[in-house]
Image (tube, rainbow, N blue to C red; front, side, top):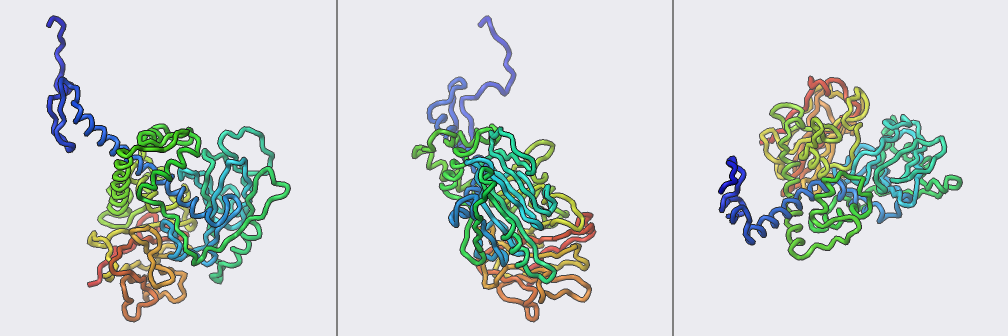
Length: 475
């Protein structure tokens, strides 16, 4: 041929390519029909798995909405755990340290006023589980209480002065607060104050606000853990249909579109795609468990050769030099509800810090039939208190046992410190003799993981001159 140009190696396709999909066949670079089918099946599956992992936060929010609104409509019903959350509440890594207040917010009917009571610590996250605003002690009101006005996406009318104006990117939002015990360890006074002062009402009815309904959910069966089967895709599609397309980045929406979830279009995959999505959900779910329980991100670990790690890597936005740390993102939303920058801030003597461990000192998963011991050295660095709570590896919620709570805390009147001020916590099916008050029950045949919470953490925690011991198997 007269017209030729030397082509560098690596551009042309060979006639056969051996891959994990099997042999792919080409005629002069054009794949044959069988290869095309293999490649599209693989591509749809891969995109399904990635869509599953990226969709975890939104599906978690839908599960929360469904759980909350079964007790009453959004914007009018607030659930309270007046005597703290117990294991009958199946919610991602919920704790039993303080009363909690959960509520679903919906801005589809227009702006909404939320009168935040004094002395609470709270956060509001949007439908994609992104942080919107902190309220209470770490919010603009600084714990004094205040009127927050939430305006929906696209709202352009002027608002009067006197409000803390918040402009979320989605219509749906999850709001949760915590209150605190008084100096006598009693939660009731603050719960009563909140009932008297908290209000949520349409801005259009500010002159005559409707009554807010409070429901005590303590010890009532409640589950807001998201599904992991085909229902996952139906939950995800609810968010895609309801929320503005500009509320999320185009690449993530592109993954959702690739599996058939597109705003304004019915979600109706054919039988081939349904089968792929069922498998993608199963593999996505398994992958989320592998990432969460065997996290490879070294920066998430507090110490070398230690199981103790943060549920953050890259901060509350999971970023490393502007890039999303995908595994940090996945593991967080697989086992944690809510997000706030306050959770990563270094505040000496204020706020809280969390450390979690999924394996023992030898790197083995915790076995509910075996006995373990955690040693906390003297001078545990807290201004307020600390707690240790164990969670179910299936539901990522409090482990259900015969104990009222699967936890011990420095707030427990009967917890015993050692003579030097250190603390020992025991785990197993039965308590060691004489250690009943320092024991957390486990269940044979079930796994568990632990979250150590420090409230009002002090400098030795941050500079790592104090560190918890690894959890040792007692032989």
